[in-house]
Length: 250
Image 1 (cartoon, rainbow, N blue to C red):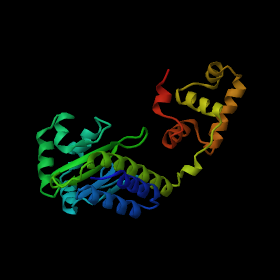
Image 2 (image 1 turned 90 degrees about the vertical axis):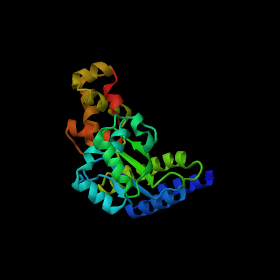
Image 3 (image 1 turned 90 degrees about the horizontal axis):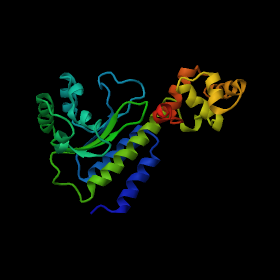
């Protein structure tokens, strides 16, 4: 049985990763200990031309990756599609409960089995403002899994993906340490700008003068390198300063 000690070891390893190679090694080790054979973690983007900053780490059979890329299976991947329908980890055998499987989906799953991907467990990941993603652990079958492997895989997938995001942000020079430290009123003003409010409307909502409202907005803009308002909102969403819920809440 996998113990709390194993879990703590896995999570500590993911927290300490500073490079993609370290994270790859940590995920590969966790995959083996859990009883799986292969893993794939990344954003759901076209692997033939991934955008800058997209995460992609995998030990999937290279022939399967080539096979799928040649046939455009990315657009028909039932695991990726199913991962947009739930926040919980799911077994591949249960995909039909999450989405309606088309003949193409069934073909992709059947062909994957020929490359050692006959069964698996996928942890969905979605951060507002970023691409959908997931962390999948796969094997020819689930017979070799250790007891408690699935709940531990759920946590491993989540922590590993967050480690990948941290590494990617550092590579793009969006390190957590550079996140602007906004004052409370600047944050309030930023959210209201994101809701499309003018300085006058912000002043009325916050019960302050228009000049003071403008200064709060300008303070937030200065914190983001004098960014234009639209870009400031995008950066704040990316940084996690605000969420889509903040912008949509009435």
